[in-house]
Amino acid sequence: MITDMMTPFELYQPSRVDDALALLNRYDKDAWKLAGGNDSFDWFKDRIKRPRAVIDLNGIAELKGVRETADGIEIGALTTLAEIARNPLVRQKYGLLADAARKVGSPQIRNSGTLGGNVAQDTRCWYYRDGLPCHRAGGNTCYASRPTSMNREHAIFGANRCMAVNASDTAPALVALEAKMVIRNPQGERVVEAKDFFIGPSVDITRMTILTPKDLLSAIRIPSKFANAQFYFEKVSDREAFDFALVNVASATIVKGGVIEQSSIACGGVESVPRHLKVVEDVARGERQNDATAKLVGQAAVRGAAPLNYNQFKIVLMQNLVARAIRGA
Amino acid sequence: MSKNKINGGCKSGGGKNRERPGEEDLSLFSSARNKFISRRDFIKGVISSGATIAALGYMPGSPGLSRARAASPGAVERLISLKVNGRTRRVDVLPQETLAMTLRYKLGLTGTKLSCDRGECGACTVLIDDVAHYSCTTLTHSVRNRSITTIEGLEGPSGELHPVQKAFVEELGPQCGYCTPGQIMSAVALLKENPHPTREEILLSMSGNLCRCGSYDHYFRAITRAAQGG
Image 1 (cartoon, one colour):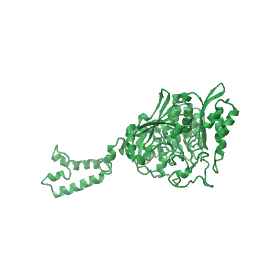
Image 2: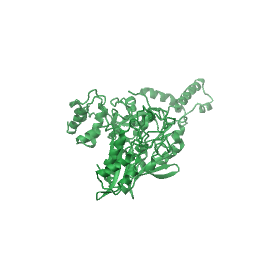
Image 3: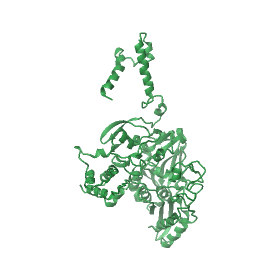
Image 4: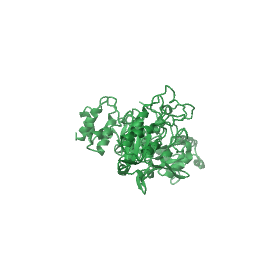
């Protein structure tokens, strides 16, 4: 039994966004933004991350809840995954996100875990999480890309010194729905596309998202473009509960008379960002929704994959998941 | 600390106030205005004010160490009230303390188990406002105004077992029993929200609790029994 505790930090529980931003401004790199805590406390208990100040955002009411807007819906970043999974508005029109939220972790994790925390979470590469001085941690090597490395869960695309993948289930769903992320900082507010929110090692190897220490993800806006479209979400992992995806796929397809008019599709677990499959959308547009099209887009989706020693299986897995998503089952 | 001891401490501090009604409490330095200060009073004053200064660092919201923090919106006090099992408990909580730690080591509620301490097993499951949460992954400070229920809080007014607990006994639910409190709390949360769950709903709701003995079938039968009213 573990009887030790996290190392001390100063705890702040502001009730207004402005107070949280003032604290972020004051502590900058020494501050840690706490949402559900499911990931944060692992870092603290393992002594890998030791922030001076922890800013618990759970008391900020304006960061919670699902609201209908003129064009779609807006979800507060601190809304729990359980609430998103059962919210009638989300389920009815944007079921893709509800399906993705329902696949995260376990019931207890979804009860405390938030949408903002899920998309902003750090990578699961265990070499990195064990505190090894890899590229991502500021060192000059990658422990996952050596011949004997255990890299079954690592990237098959876009590796640049770092082989880690984005582990979020909701991130591919947000990319597929063309969501917009609302970011606030002491200077003001900005809105970025979900696909630009996530960044790879070639942009900044130490971060998974464009959020800087002073930035606060306040809300996620989902436009009505794909409301009530044909949705498909599937996650393949070693265990049903608790586990992160080996590969997951999220797609929104608009079909008219058996012909794919428009599709939007993203895969998680294959790259350091949710992989937005533009090529699939181009290949599928105007094609009949059938097995032949599915096979074609599956092949197109994995073109250019560069697997490591133990993750070749992800190529076939991704190919099949994309094919299923476009076929609709 | 006994009640007598607390009263005794107050009495010695209040002695001077009785002599000078209406005057502010005397510190060491203001008492120097008194021309007739005795050697004994002076030494007593030095000792008590020294103790006060030394103790300041440990006092919540005290000046000195935490002055900067107290001025910030959202800074937390260490001495808080928790609503646990229908009772309000005063407890001194560190900023980085998890609810599992507070329940087990500050409030003596050791029915809540710690196993992985990483939100990966479910042994520490408790109800927060009737919803199942991992108490190892919850900061105590974040549940200040919420209602917490642990396995100890399930018993009836005359100490009888909760229907879910009875069903777990009837179906020989536990084997080693370590994960059982967490399993029961998850089951209670499920039945509160959904008194007549389907097979799939039970399996989904219990998927956040691991059992290394593999008594999943026993637990499943127990929950089915509890849902049918024992």
